[in-house]
Image 1 (tube, rainbow, N blue to C red):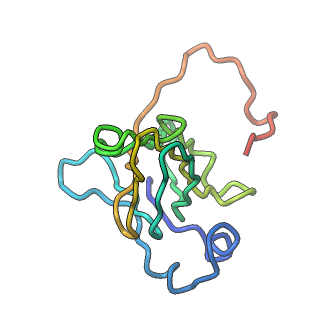
Image 2: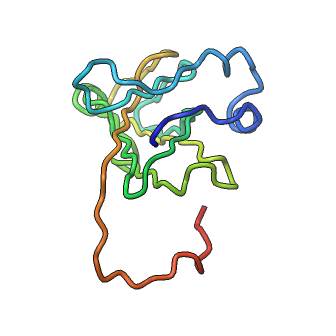
Length: 153
C-alpha cells in the first residue's frame, strides 16, 4: 500500500515548530486533477528564495510505498520555466526504506536554488514541488545480502 502521512508532532517540533495549530492544519500531498501524474506538496509557511540563494524547506510529509516502487520528487514546471528556480538535486529519489527511518521518521525535505534574477516567493498552502510514485526494475543477477548491510538511514 502506498500513501503519504504527516510526520509525528514530536518530529515536527524538532524539525519545524512546536506550533500545534500549524501541525494540525497542513495537508497531505494530492493530485489536483484526475489525470495529474504528480501529487502536489504544499508549503507549510510563506518563504522567499532570493537570487543566488539556496534554501532547505521541510514538507512535514513522509511516504510509504510498495516494494519495487520509488517516490520521485520533481520541480513544478513553472519553477524552472518562469523563475529559473530548481531543486538542487534536480530529482529527489525517496526509497521505500526511508519511511520511518530512525533518524527522522522519513521526513522529506527539499533544497531549492534560485538561479534567476528576481526573488522567488511561495505562500503558505501553495504547491512547491510534486511527487510521483514509479515502479523500478532490478537486475536478475544481483548478488547482495541486504540483511547483512547497515542502512545508510
